[in-house]
Image 1 (cartoon, one colour):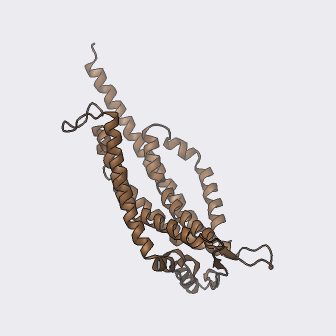
Image 2 (cartoon, one colour):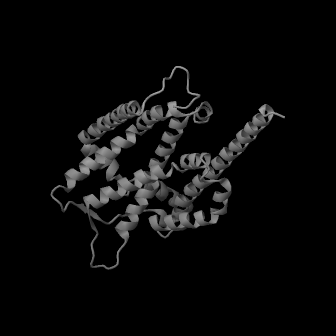
Image 3 (tube, one colour):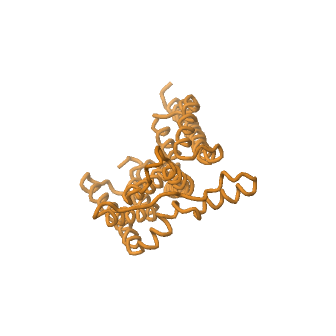
Length: 285
């Protein structure tokens, strides 16, 4: 424990730290398991209204774009068909996907509590000023995660499903996807997007420990734009508006990360200057 820990907190041995961590992990897993069981029991509703929803033309994203296309007089935005079927070619395919999707959904719902449990374990080891600057960390991480999950579910997943369902190298090939492939793709896209939106948090801590600087991020801004454009081109149909729906949020996320990095760098520089001034005052003349 740091020297400037709260007076009410006693120093713990290594084994006591492990025991404390074990109980935090157990409580976090218990929350995930509770929501996993609930999702498992509600499987028919979950698959019909959540898992398979991005593969239907009445999905909110497609309905919104179709209405917007009618408004601007561009019918190309209206998705009229998503031509593919879902099959289960493995004996355990449906059961395995039932378990996996239930666990991922349980993890998503329980995510704020999981982060809070790990934060309770980490917080006592922080210095006083680090605790002050880390206020709202659990809320920030959770909000960014849910924004990322929503972005992945309502933007990336439906366009990826639409693109892959319509992709064909020959008329002789019929798209009949295995349920394992479909569920894994949708779940990983959504969960990956939620983790991707943690970029500002990651940049905050990397800047805090000196690995990343705002100058570094600004220097490679052009490279990041190219990478974002490539990602948008891959996961969306060859339509400029659809690509912009992916590109703009990702680029804004990168710019926010630069601002956060710059703020942390300024704060570090100010603290170092104040520390140097204090040392000069107390040093013998």
